[in-house]
Image 1 (cartoon, rainbow, N blue to C red):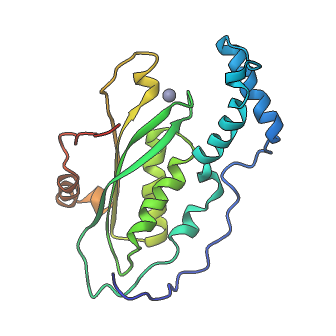
Image 2 (tube, protein in one colour):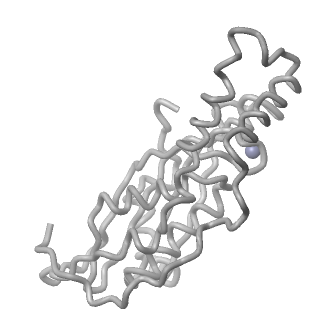
Length: 218
Ligand SMILES: [Zn+2]
């Protein structure tokens, strides 16, 4: 890692939370879970289900922590002394767990992030956390792909950004069309990765595309 240099970027603008609707009380949220249990056909009053609303509400907090974090502020601390490093930086196989906004069903997959720095790089753990900030929200994969790429583009202002996501959607595998093994691949390319076919090919080759990488342990 290059030495840490305080970034001269302007101070991050405080952003409103991702969603500005009032939260229900915890008791209301637990009651909603009881309603869904009754909707499923079971009795929320039976012994095995008594603690379930509490557990589900706590699980929701964990699944959706991304609403609490500002992705721009997260990336704001950058490193500047790169000794002229001007090749692609790529972080591959960042596993994520998200939930589709249509069914609240899990989306599990991997994100690959590439960028071509222009003076400024960011700690790689920040890239992984950026993925989580967007994954831990109700999502569609296409939007998440664009959000990750756009945020890196906005904060680091690199020459190019490429984000590729491969994921399995449990709303496809456990319900509806029941097609296990299907993987949705999305990508967003900005800057030279969008305009220069050679750079774009280099990114896709580093990811291992075309030809979709295997998704293990999903
Ligand atoms: Zn879905």
